[in-house]
Length: 232
Image (tube, rainbow, N blue to C red):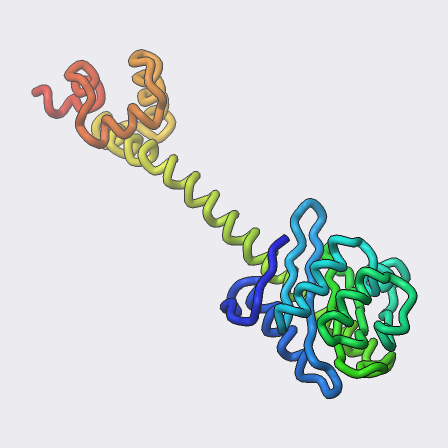
C-alpha cells in the first residue's frame, strides 16, 4: 500500500490528494482527513493530513471493515457519532479512540472504474455529523476526478514514449532509404527493396544494415551496390 503525507509535490497523484485532504481538514469541526484511491489490480493509494489518521485509514483497509466499506456497500455516507459507543467495527473504533479521535464521516465515489474514499475525523463526539456527509462525498468525487486526470496524463505520456521509440527505431531505415534513393535514382519502394535484399544477403536485421550504411561501415561489396557513384 502506498501512503503519503502533505509534503509530496502537487504534480503527482499523492501530492494532489494530499492537498485535497488539507482542504478537507480545514472544514469547521474537522480535525483531519484521509483520502484513499482504490484501483482494480493495483495497491491502494492512501494519504492523510496527519500520520495518526493515516494509520487509522490503513488499518481500516487491512481489516476490510469500517465506515468506508459500509459506505461503499450502501453507496451513501456513513457517520460514526462516537467511537467509544460504537458497537460496529471494534478494531477500527479502538484505533480511533487510541489516537484521541471520537467521530468521523466516510464517503465514497466511483467514476470510470476508479473508486475513492474520503473520511473526515473529529475530536469530539458528533462532530463532524451526518450533515458533513454531502461535503465528504464532494471531496470523494473530487479525489476521483484527480485520480482519473492523472491516469489520462500517464496514458498519454506512455503513448508518446511508445511513438518516440517507434520513430527512433524507424529513423535509421528511413535515412538509409533516402541515401539509396539518392544514390540509385530510385523511388522509396525500390530503395526499401534494395535495403531488404542487403539485409537478407548479409543475415543482419534491417535496422542494423541501415545503421551500418549510415555509418559507412558496410563492406566494399555493399558500398559498390548502394553507392555506385563512388566506384567510378
